[in-house]
Length: 184
Image (tube, rainbow, N blue to C red; front, side, top):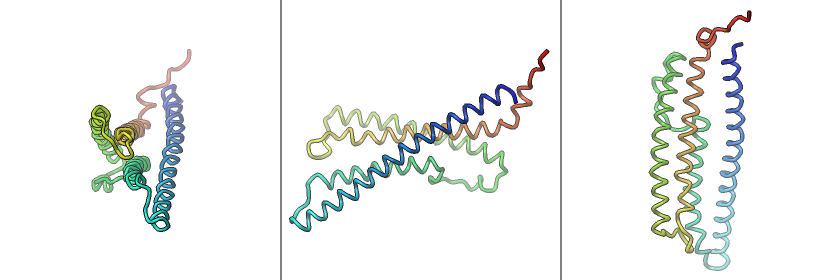
């Protein structure tokens, strides 16, 4: 086994470990928000039923939480490659062509997500600068910050998927590209 192959194996193991921990964090945040949404909505329903009115800030907070769950769900979908995709050609193409198409589409998706992340962080910055209020006199920008964060993470995830797919294309060729030197 060449040193290049060994290095790629180590890099692949490290990427898998990083991915494992990112998945745990994502899942934890998503489950926590969903649980909080269920509890808040249930409390608001009980308050309306029992006391004739709900808590004023729960409804707007639930709207913000829906945004967070939607974006975190999109992030989760990119993790498992279950996002919306037009892959008619990829379904009938041979394996190598499918891998090449995966590299291209993942790179394109990464660029789009990173552009959205850039402009959405500017949106959040302007929201902070202008003092936008979300509800209960709380500033809107911390709640909006999920937009650039999720799109940045989706862009990085697509970039990683592209690199991994590219490595899978060239992995069989590595021994011939980098022959082992014979020790003298």
